[in-house]
Image (cartoon, rainbow over all chains, first blue to last red; front, side, top):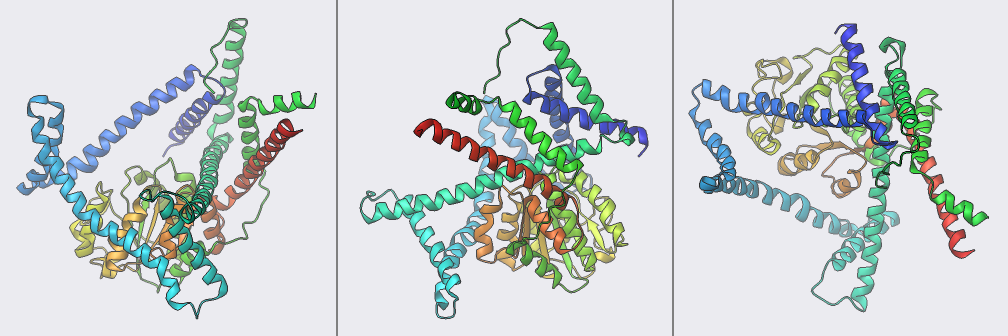
Length: 242
Length: 274
């Protein structure tokens, strides 16, 4: 790839990132441009994915090889579009029926085995060999089994939550809170990782090799905000929602 | 007087916090502190050990199902796992069920195989994007070539040396799914539990707690969680990469957030009870 393309790519990438981040300061036309460009480019990109990644290899190519069986799933797929035409929308039921039958048939047995039967087994299994377990492993097994039972009791609404049921249900809430806390902590870490990724890219594009793309775009945006503020001095601005 | 100042502190314009975070993260990128990630989690260690024990020449599937929105977390994981696989002289087949991953896969495999002098077609193969993951996973159980008869460039896959003796799940020693989607669950459901193929995963930090039950039941042989998982794996293969360099920034950002939480809670207690 030539240097010109690399530099242009760096400026576009750094520019769009900074334009989108600029909304954190306040709404501005550069953010709007980046936002609309993102939506438009995204739509275009998905269109070509479906065209070249799905329709051409899965429909067009088999038809060109006289594989007429492919017409059956093609018509079932096309039938889904008829739901937008009131007069013939009933045809879409054939496509949906196939999807539901296929999906349920594939998903139900595997989901039951993986997420239900296996997990129940995993909760009970450690107690089979209590004598051979270390005290920590036993404690771990008791916490997991106790947690599962208490959380299930919390979501069991067919009996009134009072007495022992209420106590177990309350313990279930603590287990859920620990899960949500761990999940939220991990969410914060994940968001910082994404932010780090963008900042790392901006730092890369701040090099002389990329003609200081990050610095120039940041400086340009700062000049815009200063000029905009000076020109609108005294005018009341609508505060963005907090 | 103190209460007024504390009230002002609690009403601080959040843009100052954004600025603080920017300074902290950029500072860590520009001047790395070299904070070492010594703590290796059991799940990452298990993932590493499992791959380490595979004999050379084993065929491994790398299912890379992430797009640019989760790449900062997952790309370092994929790089580390690919490096480990090539270092162990494993044969690698790359598949994806996320359309946005194709460009990232091209980037990754333009660099990593060359570090180990690995050759396309002989040591690794990249299969094209498939839109329906469940259909593909089901088909691969009986005949892999029923869904992947050609590689990403439209060349015949079966005739490539890397695919020698590979027909279906029976010939696959390990599946490593690095995904920002639900793909690890599908691999466990349709390949792991059903056909006994060992599966390990690399996921975003957000979805990491949800995979705990699969680890407990050994349905997943190991799990890398977020950038920390990548840093741990890089440490294990002794090749620092983006995961390791990101730990500095993450650690400092977390210190800042914890600091803000502590300060604001102290302020709240003072305002409410004193």
